[in-house]
Length: 97
Image (cartoon, helix red, strand yellow):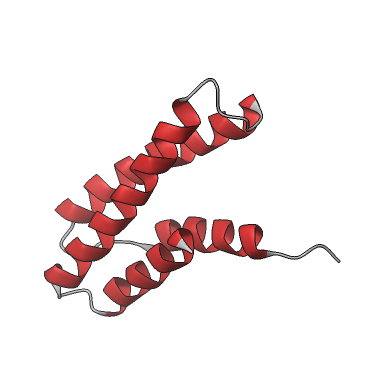
């Protein structure tokens, strides 16, 4: 649900590019979410496979850079951040056929 919520908040911010308050809240939530992901994926005792943990860490680093870019841009580009969160949300909620 966290990834779905982050995607929704970022979509809302993307739809209102001049509302810096909405943007700040969306980016703040997304940053907290990805900080948690980064902490979990950094734990060598985490039960997830090493490759998956490394992939999640790479995504967390991407989100860090994208957040910094969005905060400094007059018209932030949020599409990639939205796509990552939405894809993870869809994948986590997918039901086997």
